[in-house]
Amino acid sequence: KDAAGNISAASNSAATKTASTCTGGPIAYTNTAFTATSGTFTAEFDAVPGAAAMDGVFSLNSATTSAYTTMSVIVRFNTSNTIDARNGAAYAAATSVAYTPNTAYHFRLVINTTTDKYDIYVRANGGAEQTIGSQYAFRTAVTSLANRCIKTEVGCIAITNFMIDGVLKSANINSAEIALSSNMKLSVYPNPLAQNGELTIDFGAKLEKATVEIFDINGKMFYSRSIENASKMNLITNGILNKGFYIVKVSDSQSINNQKFKVKQVVFLKDIQ
Image (tube, rainbow, N blue to C red; front, side, top):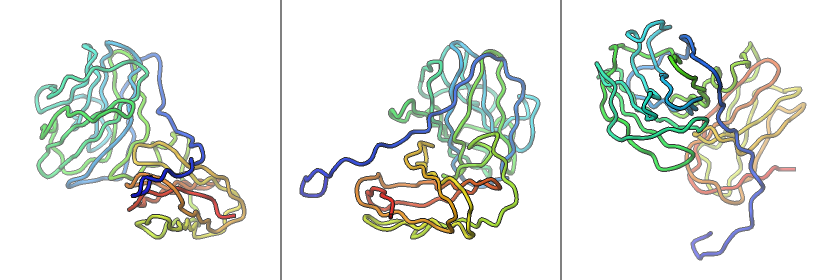
């Protein structure tokens, strides 16, 4: 609706990238590296527990880990069917949040490696965000975080849409996608994007064939298009999209590139013919 209450025409249907699921378990220490990050930052991800009454953790660490004692930031699906997080020497939860198998839970962790403290928030299926803990202490003090790890004693956990400060990490988008050397130098402008503006996605080189996708910061995909023999593409905004941060992902046979942009007003994307 506009300020006068007029209702716009319906937008095109949107495709949604759902979180992955898993079966079986237990899972041995499964480590994935990401760029070392320090100071205050936000890590977000979707986690799906594979069973009820399971016992499994997802952690952020300074390096590859093979022991609980070397983990730093830890969230857990526990045997009592609730979610908790590590606070120094023990697990705790300010709010009792129950979990259901094969349901996606979106975690938001506000982390400070200077104080070795973090806040933990979670929401299920787009519901209200709930606080698991505030200013919880790292289990192991570190100066930076550069690794994420899954470990379960019972059941399994599937992790997708892992982001640092709103930027999807390539290892998270799809573990089978490997970024190789490429001439692509992706840029997105204007940034921030205003209502009824025109968004340009510049690949920095002519791509023979590629896929362009746009995600919100929760990892939900609302736009996808294949392009051929193009060095850039344009989108016209003409409708409704919530303000906030979005990720443009461009992938071809050689590389995967991501760029973050901000929407200042509500908009709708329409291809320029």
